Amino acid sequence: MAIDPAHLPIFGDPEPVDAPAPVRAAMVLLLLNVGLTAAHLAVVSARTDHDVSLSVVPICLAMGFALCVRSGRDWARVASLLVAGLALLLMLGIAEGVLGTAALVLSTLLVVSAAHLMYRTDVRDYFVLGDDTDLDGTDSDSTDLDGADSGSAGGAASADVARGSRTPPR
Image (cartoon, rainbow, N blue to C red; front, side):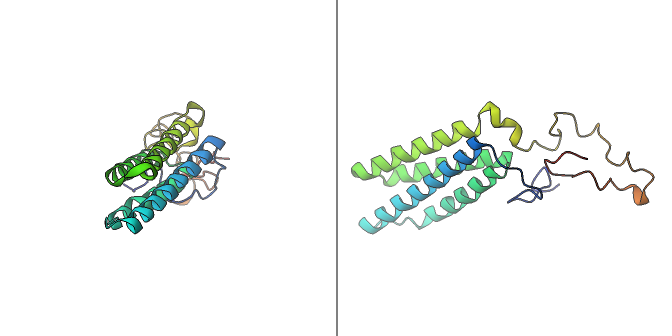
């Protein structure tokens, strides 16, 4: 079993499909949240003696997951929201004064807006489904890719079938 259920490269499709506008906007909002969180942590680190070095890991993960969301990875939607929630909890722990509260509120609004955009019904088809279903909603066990070329050498699948991509077979 592969890490990615659709057997696609983690950071991009071999034949990329342009992401819908809500998904691109969600990625931008998530990256803005990462920038705001990093700036807030830098200000807190400069002003006080708080050690914020542990926050670097969720910030880096959030950047990577935001890029994976744009690539159409279904698991990245959940992962990006979990990491963003963890970053919000870290910000809540060190938020002091008006600046900290404003950064926390703005960061929360960015994450909630991105979540709304990522889970809209009109972008549901963009995200890759799991192992059990194909993009058209049929069960992947019912389709036999080898059946079309059973006479070819080794019974390999046709070269026209773009296995693991959102490109339909030709």
